[in-house]
Length: 178
Image (cartoon, rainbow, N blue to C red; front, side):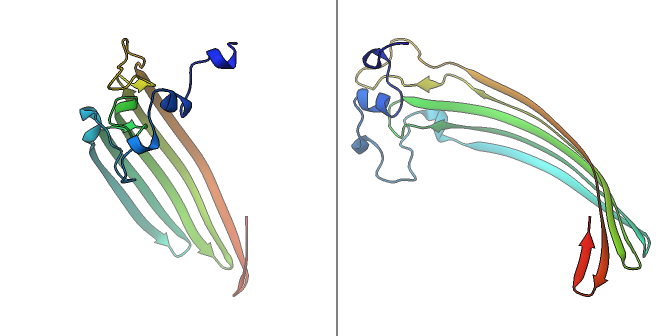
């Protein structure tokens, strides 16, 4: 390991050693003060559909089917330094696709009530940060070589569940469930 005096500074020390001060940040806390054109525009395109079908067999048995399909694409980024210079920024594009299906059976029989179900959920998504800047130079002394890089994340998530709840109404105000 390098001695403390030879280690490269990390944020917030890197910000200080690069010559930035609090006065370099925007006075408006909702203004990230970015100077990067690829960080100014934020886009999001999202759409989805869902369907719920209820079917009553009898007072003691009901079925419900819930399904959904959602898609989104976005472009945005983070300018984490709040300076006009490109010192610490992460432009990003991403997308996600989600699908879910749930089947429920519900009902009552005397003092008993119940919910039984099956659930499935799937999501696949990704994001890509291209040309990130991590502790880059200042406008007065820019970086001579790109300090950042690219970051790509792809994720796939699946979830399945079987669930049940059975209750017994002891009195009008007391119910036991498991």
